[in-house]
Image (cartoon, rainbow, N blue to C red; front, side, top):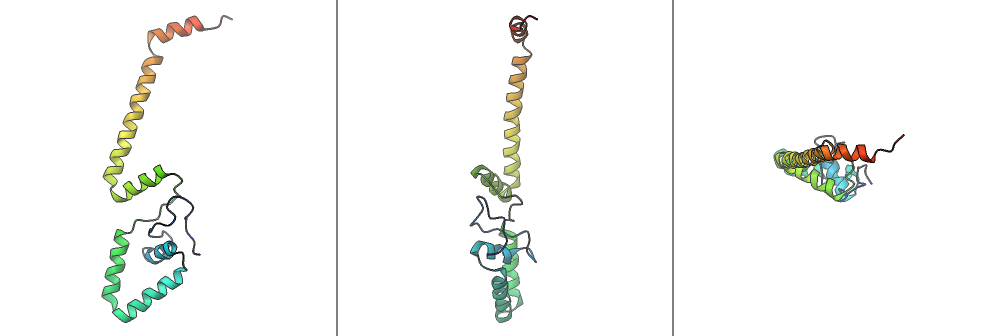
Length: 132
């Protein structure tokens, strides 16, 4: 079995490896198929010899463009997998999701701040303060 970060939700998914020689396509296919990267590279060289340079180079470059890179950190939850998939597919969508999440957090913080700074809260704190 070849080296991979395959300990999370992305196990069994096809990604470009970050440890590959050229774009990580062969290593990513080897990790996905759970075979040695040497066999995948051997098959690529054999196809290269029998079909010529341009068909294999074209297919390899297309695969390098469309295969998502392997996550740097193993994905632990379904939510992390969903975010990574959305980010790798559409960065603008991921940024808008992050912006929406931070806006929700900001609204919650403002509500908490308004409760804590309200005059009623101040009086309750003074009345409920233990006398020393």
